[in-house]
Length: 553
Image (tube, rainbow, N blue to C red; front, side, top):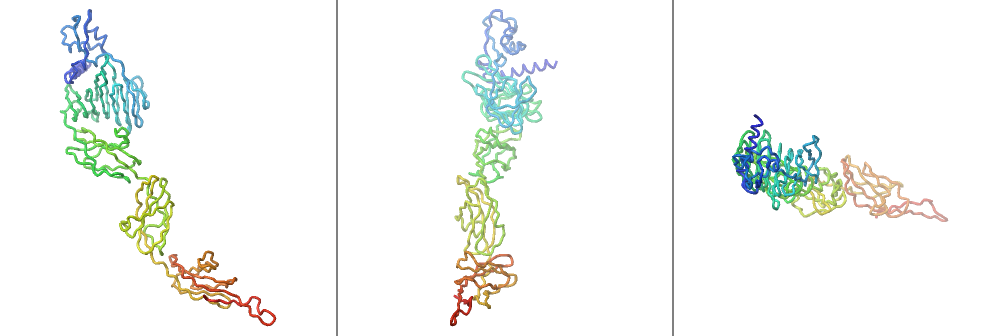
C-alpha cells in the first residue's frame, strides 16, 4: 500500500510539472516518438526510458485507451526527463575552506578540490565557513553555501539536446544559475525534505531550513515550487515558503536591499560599524564581506537585526566588497545590493611610546621623545602642540626616520605630543594616543663669586640655593667645557681645589640640582688666570717652585 501511494505521488508530481511549466508540453520539454510496426508501449518504454516500469504514466500522458493498440505512424509525446540519458559531469570552479564529497558507492568523505569532477550520484558537504561552486558544460552552475548538504541525484544529457538535473538539498542553502546552451534546453529540479523547485533558464536560491521548511527566491526568470500536490509559479523578484506537510505559500514580493550609509573612503581602525538604511517590513539583514565582487570568497557573513549596525573586526588590510540583503518575517531573503567597496587600512600601527610618560613633568626647555620601532613603518610623523586638539599648530609635522627625537622649546608650560607611522608608499597610519607633559622652570643658575686663593688652595663659592639642593661644578681650560679638568657633584655651595699646575686661563661654572634630580642650566663661566712668579736675589732664585699668582679676569 505504501509503495502504491508513493508511486501515485510521483505520478502526480510529473503531471503538475507538465501542466504548470511553460513549454513543458511543447517540444522543449518533450520529445516526439513515431510508432513503427510491432511497437507496443511497453517495448517503446524499455527502449527509450530510464525507468520502463512507468509505461502506464506515458500512456496516460498520451491519453491511450489501449496501451497494446498502437498504429504505425502514430506519434507519442514523452517528457524529456523520463528518457535514458548520458551522464553530464560538473567541474569544481571554486572552493573555499574544507569541502567534502563522496559518491553513492562509498561511505567515506574525501576533500573536494578545484577542477575536481563531480559526477551523478555524488554528495557534497560544506562546513561552517566553506563554500563550493560547480559548473556544467551548458553554463549552468550551483553555488553551495556554508553548512549545506547536497546530493546530485541526476545530471544527464537526454536525447540530443535536452539536459536534465535533479538535486537534493538535505540542509543549507544553494544559489542556482540555469543557462541555455546553444541548441539545448535544461530542466532543473531541486528537491528538499518539504518541496521541489523546477526551473529553466533562471537564477534562484533554495534553502532547506530547520524543522523541514524550504524557502525559494527568484532573482531572475521563473520557477515552479511544488509540495503536497500543489504548485505555485514564482516570478522574478518573488519568493515562497513551504513548511513541512503544507503546500507552498502564495508568492510574495522580495524586499529591496538597504543602502550602506556614511561609507568611509578608508577604515583606519577596527572595530568599526556599518550602518544601513531602513527598509519597511525588514526583520533582519544578511551581510557578506568578500574579497571578490561575486561574493564567493567571503571572509565575513553575518545576519543582524534590522536597525542594528554590525561591528566589523578581525580583518586584514585590503579591499573588500560589501553585499547586503533584506530578510522578511517569513525568512525570505531579497536580492543583494550591488557590491560596494570597503577599504581597510589600519597598518602601520602607531608606535608604542617609551618616553615621556603621560602626565610627566620636566624642568627645562628640552625633552627627548622615544618609541619602539614599528615593523612596516618607513618613517614617523610627530606633532607637538600647546593644545590637546592640535588645532593651534595643525600643519607642524616633524618627520623622523629614527626612534628618538629631541625637541627644544622656547616656552615653558603644558605641552601635548602624538606620533604616527608612515608606510613606504606614503600612507600615514592612525595617530597614537595624545601624551600630555609639562615643562617647569629649571632650578636657577647659582651666581658664582670670584675664585680666590685660600693659602695655596683654590676656593670657589656660589650662592646657596636652599636645603636639599646639590650642585654640579666644572673646571676647564676651554670655554666650551669639552674636556673638563674637574667635573663633580657637591652638596655644599663651595668647592676647594688644588690650583692647576699649568699656567694659563681657566673657566669655572656650576649648576643647581633640585631634590627630584632635575638639573638646571649652568651659570655663566667665571674666568681666571694662573701664573707662577720667581723673585730673584743676588746670585740666584729664592724659591724652587715660585709663588702662584691668581689673576681674576
